[in-house]
Image 1: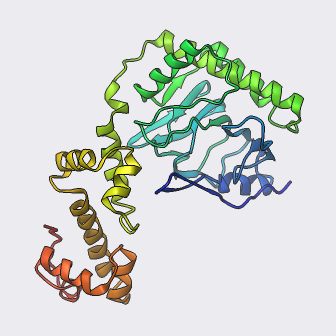
Image 2 (image 1 turned 90 degrees about the vertical axis):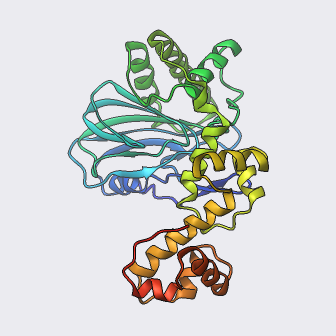
Length: 341
């Protein structure tokens, strides 16, 4: 069965996110290099989940690779909370700046702001079960909104939310209850999502989260409220801004992206970068432009200016001269080190 699908996007008001399409995985399945059973929405692989049922469920599935593969899932984020359970084999996994070798019985838990990778660079022989559930967050300081079909008691759901917001441990060892819940879910991945099947999936998914809540509570992880703070949200946004400086940002857009006011983002930006948000944006754009000027000598300066977020080449040249003390053309031909003021 060919299950390749077009990637889709999802967005907040000002930020465009591209859902992980699992392209290498679906291509390997189409080549019969592994067995894949999955249910998904949008670009996720497998049978289509119903539009009006199981809302918030993005993807679930299991892959069974009996041999080492020639593909991996590169750095990406998901629009929901992703749980994976390694039922067999060993698997390279990395999140942010940490690397792990997953062993049988390991499970991972990643939040939407945690960039992660599976394989190094390729996936080894393994059997992996996964579940992605959207709880309405993209940044640490946003309130979580669990799907209405979740059956957990309100107090238990509140406790689980706090545990997942204030502790970001990614790799865990599953207990017997959690392992069994994942295996029961995997057994349902190949069924067409009829109304009866959807009801069964709700029960199984709730069993996983109930088992997860009990497992995390028994480990008594250290909780840190600063992980869901506004200050951290701004810090993560500023990190992302360095690779998204070409977008048409304004101070209002930056503030709204972080869910805070203009003065608040200005204060935290000053704290972390010693400059205003717009000054930091300009600094990011100039650094990117300087790199392109040296790396792509045949590309026009105007094209580079526009691709880095400057509205005109004249304005780019003016800012460049003011901040670096030379013109873009002089920079391209010289050997001076980059020092953006």
